[in-house]
Length: 244
Image 1: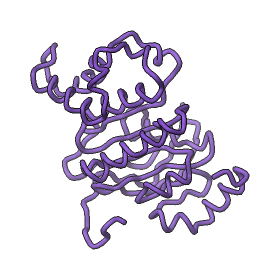
Image 2: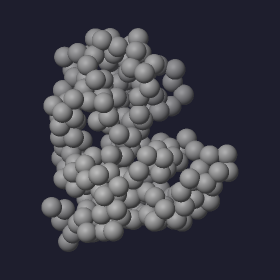
Image 3: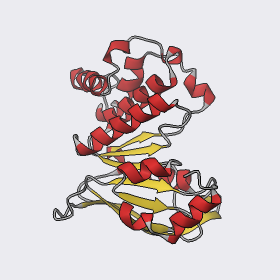
Image 4: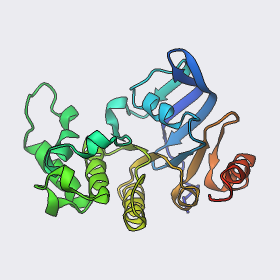
C-alpha cells in the first residue's frame, strides 16, 4: 500500500487536455496530476487516445488545446520513453549494449561521442535489468522478453525520474510478461522512479498501479481503489466481455 500520510510533490500536471491529429479530436477533458513515486496506469478501449496522450506527454505531439506542465525541476528531457515496437524495429541490427547506450544520448551535450559516465550508466542499467550477460548479442536475435528488457534499460538510461511505457508487455508470453511487470514494479518501489504506463491488462493495473486514468468519452482519474468501484471500470469490463 502506498503511504498516503506522505505528501509527494507533483511532477506532471495535465489540465483540460484535448488531443488528436491534424486538428481532428480524439479525446477531450483530460485532467490529472502525477506525483513523485506514482505508478499511473492508463487504460481504455482501442482508439480511445491512450498512445496519443503519451506521445503528447513526451513531446512528440502537441495538444489541440489545454495544458501540460512539468513540475519540481522535471522537463520533457527527463523522461525515459518506451514506445510500442514495430516489426521493423524488432529486426534492428545493433547490439544490446549499443541500444541501451543510445538512451544516454541526451546526456552527452554537444559531445559527438559517449564518455565514461554514459558507458557506466548503460552498464549499470543492463545489470539492473538482468541483461548484462547478453550485452554483446545482436538485438534481432533476442527473445521478445529480452528485447523489451533492452528497451526498458534504454529508457532507464535516459532518466532516473520518470518512465513512460506504451504497453511494455505486448506480445510477450506469460512468463516474460510477469517478469517485466515485476521489473517495472521494482523500479517504481525500490528505485523511486515514477511510472506512467499504458495497459490493456486490468488485473495487472489493479495489482501494481497507485492511480488509474481511464481515457474515453467520460474520462476517469483517481486511485486504484476508486477506479475499482467506478462506472468506467464496470462499463469497460462489460464491454470486454468480462475478460478484464
